[in-house]
Amino acid sequence: MGMFTAINIAATGMTAERLRQDVIADNIANVDTTRTPEGGAYKRSRVVLEPITDTPYFRLPFLPDEWDGGAGNGVRVSEIQKDTATASRYVYDPTHPDAILSGPYEGYVEYPNVNIVTEMVDLIAASRAYEANAQIVNGAKSMFLKALEIGR
Image (tube, rainbow, N blue to C red; front, side, top):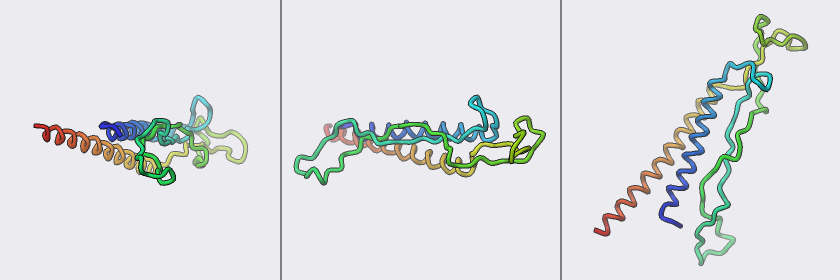
């Protein structure tokens, strides 16, 4: 395991959480968007993370293979998905330019499936995860400085 492995792992987490915060901010900004270029109301986006497993890691020579779950290498964003599982909300407003003209929802306007409370909770969680990764970087930095003081 290299000297900067902890910093590299924390950096991947910080990068992922920063993107997650940007996606959440985009969701909040589009909470009332009823018309998109794709057609229909805005759909909530969410970030999907996956562990980084394609980089080699240091293996302990005395540990049996079945006990070695592998050292962590960080995370990466695998995709940004549109949330199609959550239903949109419908508000009756026949004077709205995007009101549905026919069918069972005639006169209703389809609004995005964005819930401000959920987005704020996710934003706080992403912010705390970013801060935790920043603390890891600061801790590793202070350990490096202490190690340099030993050599004096």
